Amino acid sequence: MRRKLALFLAAAAATVAAVALAGPASAHVTVYSTDAAPGGYGVLTFRVPTESDTASTTRLLVRFPADTPIASVLGQPHPGWTFTTTTAKLPKPITTDDGDTLTTAVSQIVWTADSAATAIKPGEFDEFAVSAGPLPNVKTLAFSAIQTYSDGSVVKWDETAAPGSDVEPQHPKPAITLSAPATPSQAKSTSGDGGDTDALVLAVIALVLGAGALGLSVVNRATAANR
Image (spheres, one colour):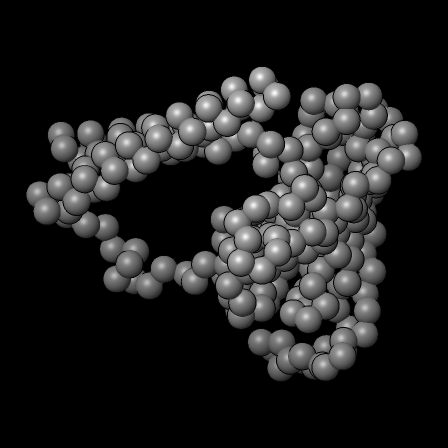
């Protein structure tokens, strides 16, 4: 019973936190993954919202970091869109897991809408995925992106926060945190009353924190609306 209650509270906390954090940042071009880990292969998905009220997104260019090259980048076909990749010579050759030496790597990928009907219209978003690896042994992997609209306007998502600043820039780079894969001991599920109690406590804490974040988000939005 306590295990079910803990799971319910955890789910509720996640929902509250998601609502609280949804705001201006959700309109950015972002990247996420469920399986990206340092040294491994993963699917990187770029989420592209159309912020314009009158124009549609017709093109997305993503540049891969040159200082931490990725040997293999395969684009996933996307209905109504065409993609092309560009390779560049590496300043230093890299060796793959198979022992092959690579002197070039994908430097950028561009998705282009085939027609106005398949462009990302105002109030909509779309996602574009690539399979990439081996991923570099870094904590955070950042890209730069250029979003083009049907009216010819261009938005460059290539800004980073100032050193030591918590203020997010207006057009931040899409970035992802690479998490090490779970070890067998970490993946092992807990059992017994002790595990249920710990899960329950953590779920309650998460719910409280999520509720606080929601309240702060509401206050911030109300303040912004009154400006």
